[in-house]
Length: 257
Image 1: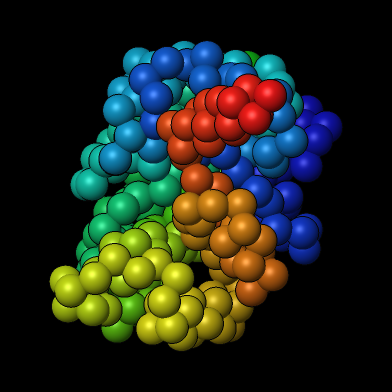
Image 2: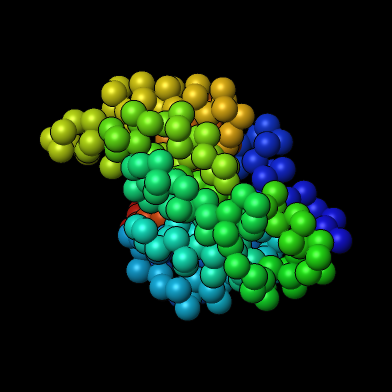
């Protein structure tokens, strides 16, 4: 029996969740960051160098710290989403969902029938959830979150249709790619005024649909701004950026001494 709030319940609780973002191909890194005060840990298989095996090994390390694990899968690799659900992740972020068919296919791998067509094999999810097979099957669709990424003009144009797809629990914004799309490929400005206007539109449509919202922030300061905007989940920077920032701060302190 589950004794702690589920990941969707945490997202709906009213306080934005702040998550670590990991791409270094070593499971100890997300496991280590899970021991900090992040609310969850995301492993990035799209742009990060972490691969399936390393991310899979990190899932129980994150769970051992009492935190939800999420993955961003590579573009179009929806079957990988199901494999991570089997391992016990709490959410999957799918990049470049630009059509309703993309959203439907993603949802089909994320949810058991009658919502989707996820197949059975929840070896890790059963042990991490503490549920038996029957209870897990009955509850699984409500225990995990499917985030469709909105990062293009095409996705913005059909945002309501994406949100209305059964099995899509929310959207996750990639502000850098969105800024490239909105500028016609002229600039990368994830905090620019055109992007901010688009974010307000997305948040309004997500709330109207009763769904969830997430976004990537390149820094802690920007994460705070986006949390105040009302996103349910904000992912902060990256493990690489945090490593470099820590190294630079230590060196600066030593050089001052």
